[in-house]
Structures are given as structure tokens and as C-alpha cells.
Image 1: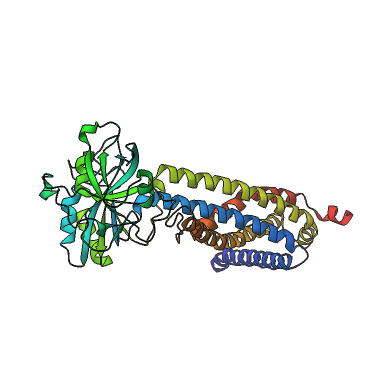
Image 2 (image 1 turned 90 degrees about the horizontal axis):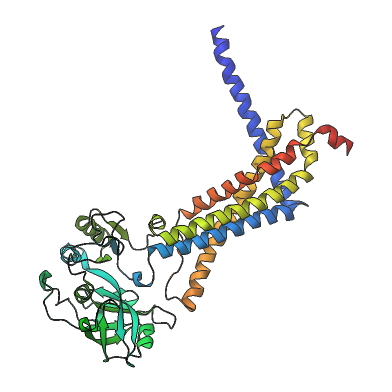
Length: 428
């Protein structure tokens, strides 16, 4: 008796699994038949709508990710980047600027001493006003670096056009001689009307008096193979310690990030040792978590998600509802052979899920192509580098969004299916 009792639930469970696998098989066969038969147009339009929505979502999210990873001043050829994290103890300008790294000059020197590391440089970004050749001040984004004489790129500009080293730092005293050099982007040079050899007066900003202004000499109007186009931002390279002194960042040796060149593993290890609480990013690996750290990028991606789910769900609900309405006879046949209401509704739900899943796969391909296209157009017109990034996590993200849209949309086709009965179809 006990053996029969123990076997009964297992047999029931087996029959249940067989029944559901049969329903899934029937649904797949039916969906494939409809996708290649006379109703292929409606299936194709639904898949296309989902695909276009997902593609739009991925392109916008890719742009937001690139925005979160940094703008024009973050273009460089470094192998490892060290950036501060929100709420870190390395943030030291309360309520005025974003978090910055501290002791960057000193720790960059420590990083440079590691085997496998070729060079390390703090990077400080500040907005300053430079007096143009016509006497009017112009706003330019200054990027402070420590060059080493090698051909390296920061902010899309060549570091080797600056004198190697950073003599003004003077082991942290900031009383060494100034190099007084500046490398201008083409846009900055056009804005200032400056060329090689010109002298420009620099001040930290409108809150500082002209008495604090210093003079720099244009060492080059540089092009590192990317930024030199006409549509770039007005950017210029200067020595890091001179910009730190000018901006008040010398107290604490502050910088926005530290760049490291060399063997990837060695550079990453040295960076982690120097800044264990900071974010260490290897070049070529975009970090999706950056979206949550940038308010504008996060808002953009969230809006794109809401719009995408709304549009996708609305279209799927409408088209799948129409499809179910046309497929009432099949549902009636299922009822006549004993498939319960729950099973018939499951067929509709699975069919909706298949449609959105296929649409998501097509959308991923279109989104990846769209990101490539956006970058190509931007590079040829207004931007010197990539303005959108694709990350492998976009694949499960796109599938999840498509299935979520299908979940939001499925109540309407289920309501249509629930009103179908054998008697009503026989009457028709």
C-alpha cells in the first residue's frame, strides 16, 4: 500500500510534465507554421516592432554608457585607468566637485616603479579662461598630465609635445620651475586664434582676478589621430602640477584619474596596490555599473527603458490580440479535445513569449549594428571617437526587456482567448 501511495505523485508529476511539454511543442509548431504561412506578415511585423524597439533601447543605452565612461577629455590610449568611487575617502572637495583621487603625483610615481609598468600619469581636468589673440577671454578645458617623452595620447591629444617630466611638482613642494607649455586641440586653437609659439594668459576662472593669471606658450596645435577634426571640444594639455597650482588642487595632489601604461596585468596590479579603494578599469572593458554613477546617463537609460517597454508592450498586445482573434478555431479545437482553459491560455502566452524572444534576438543584431553606425557617423562628422559602446551584458538585458514587454502585453491576448468556446466557433 505504501509503495502505491509513493508512486502516485510521481506518476501525476510525469503526466503533468508530458502534457506541458506537448503544449509547448504544439505552440512552437503552430508559431513556425504561422511565421511561414499566410499570416507571416503579422508575425513579421510584431517581430520587427520588437526588434526596432530593442535596437533603439540598445543604441540609447550604449550612448549613455559612453557618456558615463567619460566625454572628450577621457579619450586616451592608456592600458589601465584609475578613477574614484562615489563616497570614497579619496573624495576631498565637499559639495563643489565630484570625487577625486588624492596623492596622485606621489602614487603615480610609485606605480611607475613597478615592473611591467611603462608610465603613469595623474590627469586633472579643469575649465579655465584663456585670453585669445584678440584680447577676449575664451573658455577652454585644460587637462593636466605628466608626460614622459613617449608617444601617448590623453584627451585625444599627444603628450609628447610637452616637455617630459613635471618640474613644478618638485617632490610635492610645488615651487619648481614652470614649463609654461600648452598643447591645443584644433577647436581650441580656432577659438583662441592661436598657433605654435603664441603666448596666452590663463586664469582659473571668472572668480579669480587677473592678478592670478599666468602665461603659457603654445607648444603645438596637436592631433593624435582622433581629436583634430573641426567639430571637437576646445581642449588643451598642460603639465599636471601647474594646473594643480592654478586650480587649488595642489593641496592633496588631487586629480580626476590616474592613467597607467604597460603590461595589462602588471599595470592593473600596480594600480590596485596604489588605490585599493578606487575603481581600476582595464582599457577595452567598459563597465556597465558606470551608468549608475552618472546621473544624466542613468536617467537617459531609464527613460529609454520605459519608452521601449511601453511601445513594445502596446504593439505586441495589439498584434497578438488580433492574431488570437483570427486563431479562435484552433483554440476551439484544443478545447474540444480536452485541453483545459489553463492549457489554452498557456498556448497564447507561450506564443507571445516566442514572438518577443525572436524579436529581441533580431533587435540585438540591429542594436549592435546601430551602435557601429552611430559611431561611424559621429566620427565622420562631429565626434573624434566612439560615442556609443556595446557591452556583452546588453544581450541578456535586451532579452529580459523584450520578455518583460511580452509579460506586460499578454493579458490582452489572454482575455481574447478566454472568450473563445467550441459552441461559438461551431455557430460561426
